[in-house]
Length: 201
Image (cartoon, rainbow, N blue to C red; front, side):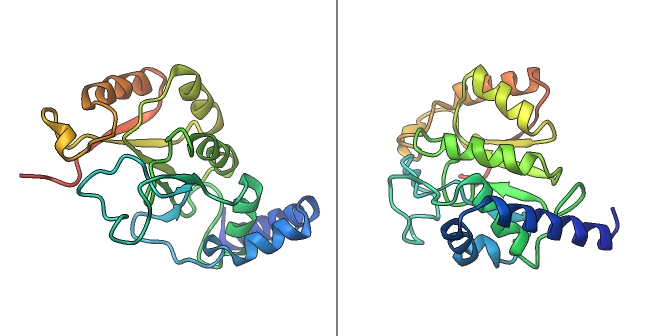
C-alpha cells in the first residue's frame, strides 16, 4: 500500500467513524493523547488502562505517578481507533506503525483485560504490527479470542526471575505459570517471546 492509498484509507476510516460515534465520543477522542502523541522507538504505545496492581518493585510507572491499582482506559475501542486516525504520526494498515500495548499498565489485569481485548479486536482488523507486553496468564478462551481478532499479534511475556520472585514482583503471577502460558500461546499459533527485562543481578 503506497502513501497516497494509506492516507485515503485513514481519511475514509475517520469519516466512517465520525458517522458512527456520538459528538461526545468524538470530542473525548480528539482530546486524548493517542490522537497526537508521537510513537516511541517500540511503536505507538496503546494504553489499555491506568495504573497497575502488580506493584513490581522495579517498575517505572509508579515513579511517573501512576497508582498501584488499575482502571480501564476511558476510551472505547472505536474512540481509540478514531483518535489514531487523527494522529498525524500514525500510519494505518499492514506494514504501518507498530502498536505496542503494555507500557503503563498490565494489559490483562481483571480490571483491564476486557478493554485490552476490545482494543485488540479493533486494532487487529487494521493489519498493523501489534505487540503486547504482559506478565499475566490467560485462559484458553481468551487465547482463542486474541488469535481470532489479531492472528498476527506478537506476545512478549516477562519473566525476570524463577525463585524468590515475591520480593520484586509481589502480586504478579508465578513465573512458572507464565512459562506454561507461553507454551499454550505457541500451541495456539501465536508468536511469543520471552521478555527478560529488566536484567536484575
